[in-house]
Length: 635
Image 1 (cartoon, rainbow, N blue to C red):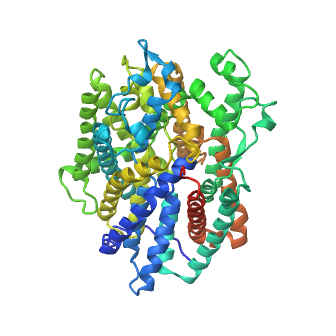
Image 2: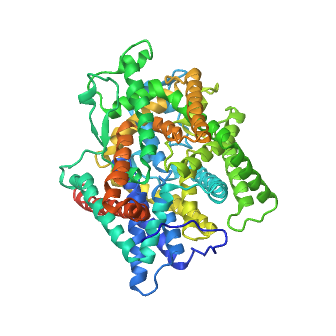
Image 3: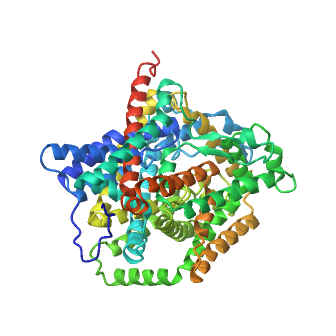
């Protein structure tokens, strides 16, 4: 029988993962996949971590085996994790090109601050003035971009340093000390294990997963190559069927195969709790608030029959949920601190002790603390130089204090559930409660953690599962961020030279960049209200629900309220697909394999499923690029 990957015990030797072969693979992946990931984002709004890591992992594992010197699993993990970071990080120069749209679009000239159109208040360190030749030349490689490129590059470098510092801290606290499971980490480790060890039973299950992923991905994505999608992306929108009975509800079924794969990893009760939380907010509460003007008059006046899931989500979020959702995040953070105060206290004491008297050989803890503080404080100094007059204590508390707590919640969330919600507009919510008047301070901020540390900590878990020195993993992460900063600039410049952005060549930008511009302008002119009472209600609700889970655990009941609160951030189509994936894995597939055997091989099947998705989508993107090449030029 195949056994699951086991935790690396402290007595086991951790081996090096950096080698000349790993470095060559990382450089190759950077050249290939940073442009592909950026292009995928410009056409669909997505990034390509699953595509890149799958193809690179398989390619280099097979090439080195073919030449008679197979990769060790530690080398493959460093390659895998570095590529994952590169392909899941949007180059910061993306936002420079977006800012050129902001400066020139007619949308923004109707928003005024003290009688001045807001697009005239964009400083040169965010975008050149409207008369600059770069708007006709469509290039980032021009002297007029110098100040913006310096600010963007420096800000990105500080962000990377802060993320790595926090990830080292929480890898120590949650992986080494608290030994959280990180369900998706086991899937990632299984992919590496099956490619290196090639055990017959593992390979057969892995190949079955690949076939399943290829079939589903073909149904989801391949139709776009022929102009006739077999499944709608990103969801079946069922609002047109339900709006008569439950107006304002976001009803649909997501077709995203990666969401289905996430569901396969989760127990049914976790997936069901997530759907309950999602339904409570986006179906039940939205229906109540849409049915009467007494609750939210602006939303009631803006709603009309015929709105899609996307339009209902966008407008109801702005008019109803922005304050409560920020409160939910704060409530989760407080609840986790209270519920796990003993383990947190113990872990922080151990961390502090290790910093004062270094004895932890696996992780450079003193260096991690220095890295985080240097980067966050440095970002505050840079922000105050660029945006004078902004309250320094707000920037300082946000960058150092709030970032630490968001990173902590994200790392614990991925450790227990495998998911952490995106945090929309936290900086704008904070700025709203300051007396700041202007434009730059709304769209540019000191370093603020948005939860990406959780994923880096999850990969830290994989480093132990694959017996890799964590220091080598973090060196790979630093290299990945550096390559994103270099190659990302070249790639963004190339795509902008190729065609205007937004344009029909990059369709997602035609949809979302006008929305981004409108949202930025609404915030800067204070036309989106952040209501303190609603923020407090959200925080208290999340605090109460998550605290109940700890209480239930003490009396012997397993009622997962933490994933229920996380469901508040997930739209029902995705939450439903997560549950479908969980039911398929835990009821249908497990019965076919036998429950005991399925538990021992499921990570290899799911790793194969993700590999099948990645291979199919990667091939699809290649064909799409070739098909566009004949008509993308203007002559």
